[in-house]
Length: 531
Ligand code: N01
Image (cartoon, rainbow, N blue to C red; front, top):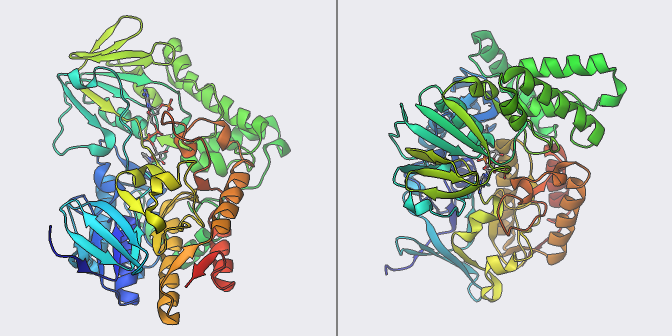
């Protein structure tokens, strides 16, 4: 074991959150900072999710930082959405421009972070057995870093290749292969659409049918890019005053206030324009809150599926039966993939996977689907799942997993009670929104707080238990004003067997979140104890 090194702050994760945190703490606060990431380069979630078709579904001009104004002008916007290589290119550019790499240790994860109450220090050990102490410990782990690989019997007996979408190796060639994809969420729909034209045969194992609408992606004109770049100040102002931060015209129009013809016309227009969040939030203000309005949106999408998919049996399998109240999905021709002769769909709710065999996947009906490759597009143990990968112990040696055994919680998505000077960017109950703006708000708040504490001579910062429970209750109450808790999805923990079904997000929106942070600060960092 090496000697213990001391730094002011340790940041874990080199994605959007960690890079900005490093920049703020090092360049504005003058702290000595080390950032660890188990990946070989910057990118965070986007480093790992390099599966075929990986694409953000936020307009590319808003999937960037607002604070690097020069880069906002220099960064090319070529398409409505940025694909994975473009996002990685952007973050590499950020790292280079701000000379961030010199403070980053790649290929190195954290195995433990243990708070030493006596000295007010965090002891952090890496998976290379290097020991550090620091005063400030920032987890910038992302929401979706712990992959969910379902424990299907016989998985290890498969003789072909198998990949989880978030652990995609370099150089996979699927050309002409017999490929099975398990999972049809945002990731599965992207992979399926991207690989269908190149694989020999594609079998999709669908557990829940999903509502997906066209993405509307494509190249943008030069004038479009020019107009964005000339109006960035106004655009960001709009983001900070919005609910979702996606640059939408979020509407409060009720579906009940327009005629049936108008409803259809509005849905049709959104379908043509494309965008998952646009379809849910630019059409009517009550799709996410009112079951009748929601049903109209469902019916519209089901009609589209039946129009697009030629085989009526497959079309029915693809028609979701539940509420349209999961994180919206958009695609680049997903449903029409099922018109290809080399694509087949297995409904694993009606005909479950019995086991994985050496040659493929055996379903309950006795059919063995012969496969060369199995792709697990089975999602993540989201939000708190990322915190189970290493040991975190706060006051009294309390394990964070134990602390969260009744479900994860936080104050403002960032602070825990019993874990002084530990700051979570995108911890439990942070904003449900376009993530870069949410990340910026949190990073700025944490950095301002640390600055304030340092200037005022406070050694520790910690949320009160009451602040945590009040924030958790507020998140729960807001979520239950929507239909989202009624649909089974990862955003309520429903995708992982045994995971607590509870609220994991603050659904009050970016504007209200920003105001909550401003109020907290104005009231002398109310809810936080500074000692
Ligand atoms: O994960 P998911 P994801 N047997 O949990 C199925 C972001 N993202 O990676 O619905 C069979 O949504 C599961 O079935 P069911 C975005 O926030 C963004 O797709 O639980 N199937 C489901 O179909 C997104 O919401 C972008 O019944 C099993 C699928 O696997 C989030 O990531 C792109 C199974 C998992 O879907 C997560 O998306 C990609 C089993 N045992 C991701 N276990 C964009 O920006 C799970 N499934 C566009």
